[in-house]
Image (cartoon, rainbow, N blue to C red; front, side, top):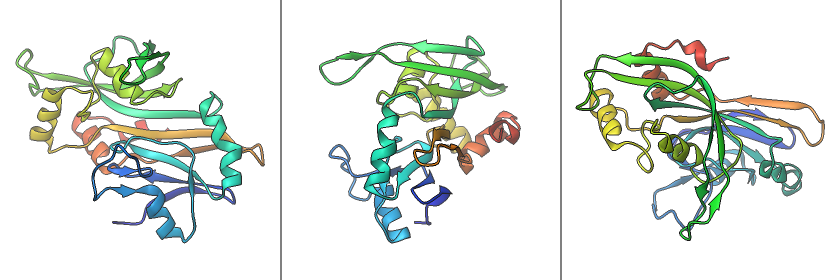
Length: 238
């Protein structure tokens, strides 16, 4: 596997642009013996231990932040439970969004006991496209949107579950998504990836108090789908 791409580093912290398919760290839920873990890959790549400060799902690409020491981790990690750290995502979703800017406020079940937790996701429509191919039997063409997303809360699979709730499924989501859309993208575009990307992360450095903003370039498969939709690359470099 190629070395992980470092996109930010100082004395205390570093960030990578996590490729899709890489897990943050080992989990009892993960049964794949061939799974790659960012924590282990970075330790081999850098020669020292790193401490993950948050997580993003295995199929999601983008910004993943680590501390270089346990003390640096203890200074910043608690802030991820609050609202001071801002995380923005990009996604390609089915259909035109009902509003250009809106909140999805819908409680999500925490576990098998169906305990509900408050969950709020904000989104902005960046671009729309209608392509002359049928992805279902109902219409001769298909519509899609590129959205910027800010999760106000941090529930498991929150973004994917919220967009499934309003039936604007994230393309490539095999857990909460639309299998008909996923099959269409695989057969028509040879695209099997989840089109969800952890785009930007902003936080105040615990030591310098400087505002740090980290941006992760979207992966090649995401760029390729933007080209198919006729969207300019500049949309994701702002």
